[in-house]
Length: 512
Image 1 (cartoon, helix red, strand yellow):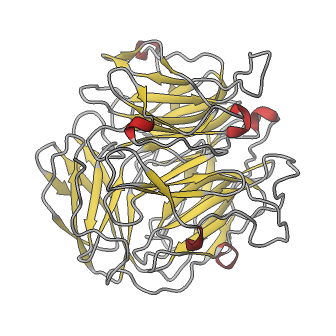
Image 2: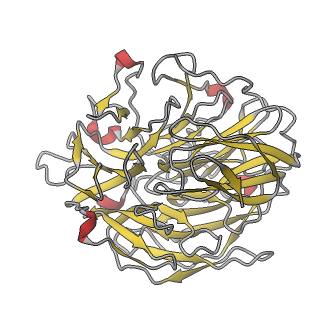
Image 3: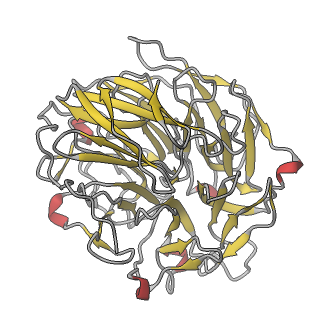
């Protein structure tokens, strides 16, 4: 029987407040271009994480045929956001990257996705990176990797890694119906062996380990590109049992096909379970989790709520849009999560919009969404790919960085007259230092906001850092943790407008 979360409901109550529309200002960013031919039509992600322990989020940007680039956050309180290029491994063929602490030394490492051999880079805590040694046992063949996710399975000191490959370039009958498999690396003690092939593969462009039923186990959701699997494929959810298996109709999982590009996950209706936003060509799908069912069942949100983002809203190009990276976040801190979508033509596809502005859809108290990208100042019409929606200068407002194909990446600082906020990051004793698989709940008195700590999703990039909560006019709230073993911490009183570290030794939770 599925757990019911009492006291949670869809509409915001008194913690939400009416605020001005969001406003962003473009800031200079050192020149960096994601470029390349057919193999880099997709990809172009950005990894966001603090690589030197100064409390500011740094970034690694994929370069495609250009070298990937590390940019260190040089922002100063009260001044505009600023980044500076830093030394990094000279790596080309990079489609994306994701941060994680592989060896539990407290320094974030990087999984680097490539056209070629994928890499695991060890961080030194001072923004230096080098390949892990042979003792880790990780080895990658020559793949076209376009998706990644990681989780910690019970009893393991190393994370389980999933690399989603795209088209098998060695298939002479390709590229259509030549999708490659997903590669699952489960640790064997203190090292990795050969990966398990999760087949069939349907040209993955995004994947996410997520505890969809809040049972304590993160399963692997995969979003696939129908353009190349053509027929016979679908979206996938792999059960992470001893022998992984696909969920099917008997489990409540419905066949679903789309030109899948990216996954965003967040509890949007207050029932305690994560809903999903799936980017695609033609329109985007927002799906509510069916909390009354017994399996992984999802239902499309009605078109009328205004979240499909299926055509450009400015620029005069009326052809269908192409969505890539998607991210949930409360850009006004009004207590209601909004969504950003990076848009852009694959290359020169005549059936799709060429001038395709990025979306910023803000949520209204009645659960509908309103497009404000142009008003907010983020309606770039470049071929956008990856994105990062995060607080980049620690002022409590979510900023935006976008990677574009063929032209420079863009940086937008959030200058909205916003509401109150809370940023909470985890420090867990032992392995899995960042608390992947934990749920953080913040009780605002009339509702509970829920965040699942994950690595993956998006399009070819993601962030690992503080979980951001918009709190409207509140001056305080309560916070608790639900651990992967389903033990629950006590509620802790927290004040708003601060960044906190929640430490957990497995028994007691404290703040610092």
